[in-house]
Length: 382
Ligand code: NAD
Image (cartoon, rainbow, N blue to C red; front, top):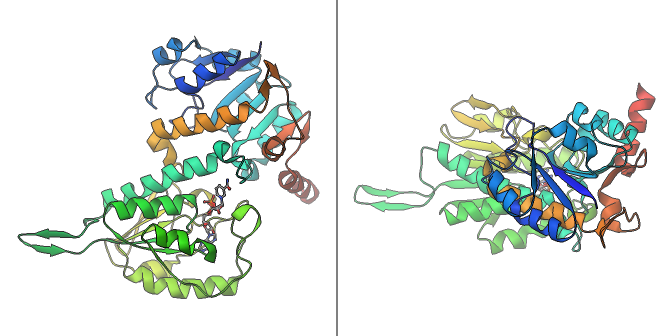
């Protein structure tokens, strides 16, 4: 018998929960014992009673439950103290943000925790059901548009009224990955005119099929890297891109920026001068805020007003749609867990490419090659 513990998240503003009554029920049916901290799902809309009704045991003390659990499922990374409270050999699932949490990675390895960084799930067809970056980016892309609509002094759709016609909002989406495409679809549903920019020319068709207009950029044949992600572009290319975008942004009412390059600082696509060329009253929602921002003026989780333009940099928008974001995240975790929990045995099949790709630390070692290399670099420089 193995026991899984689902704590209440401790990071401020983190309203999601890593398991829902739906996934807890399945875990129990597969032979796991499940402990849920009281109140863990409340803000996301999952009551203690709902967990209890599917067979979970409610616990009050997180440190005690974490210390004896074989598996701990979280959304955000644990604090150092929470990581230290895990027992040796315990399995941890969380968004560990390993590129920026090297200290925590070291600690997890030292404590011999088998830690899975949910953001490292490979972008393969087989791993789609476990892909939290996709599930959460989709939620964030949707909410970004609603956030902008709520702050814009303008309708999204065209309106024909007795007092005359008002024009639809013009939205520019930067980055046509999962979040950007969802932002495009949401803005279209609200009736806006949407333009989209991305360095990967391959997304043009997807943008057009969702009713967006693709902003053509100069040819850059190697923009697509491994797993369909973008590669970092050159400085000259960025300059050219900004020149083209300046003209588009000057007509925009809303900019939703989502451009990111895994493991790197987000590209600055909207400079201060570009914001100054925008219309007063327009709104920028920068979803790349937590990796440095696509807009030069973005400050994570703060509101900046510059020349009448509102720049928002919400770093954890998915947590503001906590119910559905949790529902999807919990399914992703459950699907990954199934690779480790077979025939009522907990094992780490290192030969499985999804397990190997997501595994951050195991048996005292840092397994993810990119993170291990970063740690060595940091140690050499220290
Ligand atoms: P992401 O969050 O890393 O980046 C968002 C977007 O920003 C990407 O489309 C990227 O091309 C773009 N971008 C990067 N630099 C830019 C720049 N300078 N200017 C404009 N745009 C820039 O990406 P993501 O949403 O996580 O996913 C990207 C792609 O990965 C998807 O579109 C898809 O092809 C692939 N993917 C595959 C799977 C799968 O197979 N399981 C799942 C999800 C995503």
